[in-house]
Image (cartoon, rainbow, N blue to C red; front, top):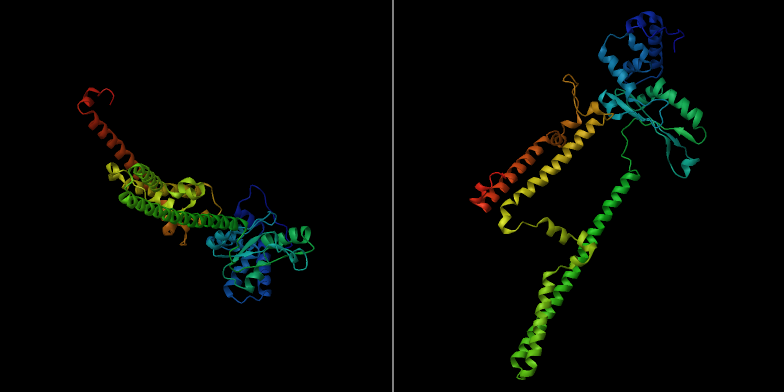
Length: 383
């Protein structure tokens, strides 16, 4: 850092600050060039970005507002040196043409890391995207705010023995944490229940069908015996037995095996499919199409409200979601994807609900008029 003491006051403008500290700013720019030259960077563009990146004070010599905003965006996308588990903002870093570096403090081999690898303090910084591989790590280590101050506070003062800073400036593989595995296990458990209930339902159904076949065969044998049996006193008894078999068959046919067990009733695919494909009575079947409109509209409304609630929650990566400013830079915004466009136009689903409400309300009045006939005129005061 330059040896000059910076002069500032709350009432001083930016230009006044530059004029009062011009010598310190010039010295800082020279020092930045010396630092970046000593790093022996492979990329010329990385070297140019490094000059401003290692100390934003040198930006005050720049007259390009785009360059100033870009470098300040790199620092803004990084984590605070004092923030606990402040990992920065990877999306905002990418939006500002930066490269996200993950620098957690982890248990080293031979210490706690020998028993269970873990990050005791997670952190992240943003470096210029022009710096790749070793160049990115070299420039990262020169960041006085996000990296050097963070290492000084946490690694050198708090976590000392058995811990070390790990540096990764390449895209990382997805981590499957406990929450992810809980969702996977819950989904697998539900699928397992459906499979078991469906198999059990199928077995009981086949057993029931075989029993019905046996009862039908027995009934046929009884009928044959009644036809050739000449003893009249015994005929009513055999006929009563035949009638009892017919009644039991009718009862068994009318019930399903999953109706008597809650587990099969809830999870068997046979019952679920029956519910899914159920239709209205024949006299009301002309409104079957309304069910499909209801399902689509309801799902669309929920999806659209989730989209709105997420925007109102002020997410940290909002700048990468929607180009709120007409002059925003070209970028692959999240809501430019087709699946998010559906959420953006969720208000059309509300129109479908208005249509259903008006249609069903008018049809209900029409049926009432048909039911009352001329009496509806006398009930005009009710309408």
